Image (cartoon, rainbow, N blue to C red; front, side, top):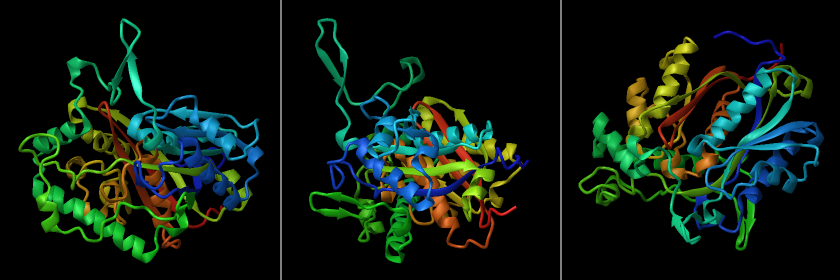
Length: 393
């Protein structure tokens, strides 16, 4: 992998997130900008960065009300009016793509400081409707992701398509989902999420923890779930993620600027890739993007130390990992979206936040870290990072 000059080498020096909670649950009172603003404030506090020094705020969002939630959130967070914001929509990939975009802005030069990430408040997402010829509203549950001729299946049906196409059994899906919950429960017990979570007040007190991990889940319970999307299928509510609210963001700048700020460690962006695939098999998109990325970086999966992959469905997760030749046991070591939930536009940024937190558990060891996510409409985004425990020259 080629090295960029320090003035153009992007590095993530801080990453935080809210708790990820079930939609219409503990965070239902927060609109998207209200979820994100505390994360932005805390990032500035932890790094000591002056709000006026932020060059731009780049935020992913999938089902919000529009109106540039990045700008709304940064003003809610108390950043000055001189700081601009831009909102990215690549559906489930939006949070990771926002970080990718910020990395590329750094690589373009200028030593800028960026806040980048994603947010989703499914609980407060607006109702959407097309306008009928008579001016009335024709409400719809989700946007169209591909023209009818390409096939535009709902997410659960697409997960079944992947399971069938790539031969992913029900038993493997259930086992993978159960491992995700067990990893997350163990992570909660060990306190591994504590330092990355910004607590939020709600009507009942303070929300400090993710509410998805289920300590009582077992193989017997998993086997009881019926097919959820296709009669006789293998994809169930147990081996699928749940919709969630949450926000996550990072501080990203050049290696040169990070050193000037006195940052001790960080994730250096080594490469990014986005790919398109058949919309009927949208879940495989992450594997295609990651495969291209690793090839261009002259890296093989066995060289990657940490992998975070958005587990929208166990079927697509396993299909992608099989395609790349990655052992499922090496992925999402503290659980993934099957246990923690999928906050659409925030999920890609959560992956990066988790990678930095995991890398910091052994700061004396340099590591390669991979984040990847499949995207509605038949796409996938992947980003490769190198963790450096010291940013000194």
